[in-house]
Image (cartoon, rainbow, N blue to C red; front, side, top):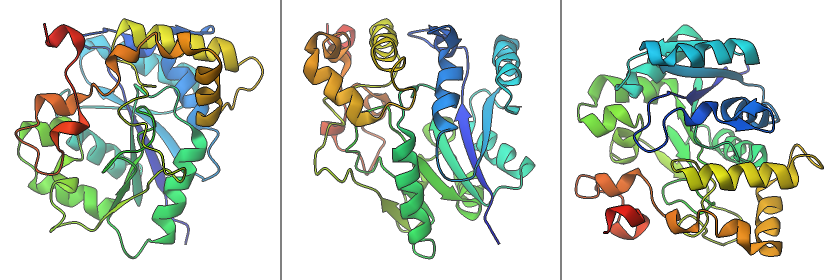
Length: 272
C-alpha cells in the first residue's frame, strides 16, 4: 500500500527581522504562494499543508492557504514539534516532510531526490535530511521522518529549541533514531557560501530578483539555473552575500551536540 506523504510548510507572520515575510510579493503572488507552486512540481504524490499558529496575526496565512487551495492547520505558536505532530495525525500521514516557509527557491528536484533516497532505504532510516551535514545552498531544506519517529520525538523532547525547531531532538540523538543524510551529488558544499533563504530584507531583494530573471522563461527553474545566473551576474549573488552562513544554529551552538561552530556564523549586525 502506498504510504501517505504529508509536506508541512511551517509559516507565521511574526518575525523579529522581517515581519510578514511569507506574504511579501513575488511577481504578483505572495512568497508563500510561490513556494507552494514549486513544491507542487515534485514527482512524488504528497499532500501539501500550511501549518501556522492560532494567533490572530496568522489569520492572513490561513486565508492565503485557502486562496492557494491547500489546507491549513493551526496549532501552537512556539511548539512546532506538536504542531507538526497534530497536523500529521489529522491527515493520517505515514511520512512527514518538514519544509520551512522561508525557502521559496527550493528546487522540487532536490525534494524528489531526498524522497527517493528515503524510500530506497525505507527499512534503514527513521529520519532522512539533506542538512546533517548540509551541502546544498541554504534554502533547499528537506527533512523527512516516519510518523513513528515524529511521535517519539513529540513524546520525549523537552528543551525549548527541540520544540521550536521540530527536529533537533531527532538528529541530536542518533542512539535513539536511525538517521540518514543525502549529500549533494556534485561533491560541492555551498551550504555556507550561497543563501537562497529569507530572513532579512536583502534576502527578499535577492529572491525577487532571481524570480524576475528566471521565472518568465522557466517557472520550474532549478538550483543549477540559479547558480548559473549568479555566475553570469555576480551582482545578484552580492545582494545578500553578507548573510551567507547565518542560520539559527548560532543562537544554540553551546546546546547542540552534533553541530560544530563552523556550520554557522553571526549576522553582520550581531558582530558589531
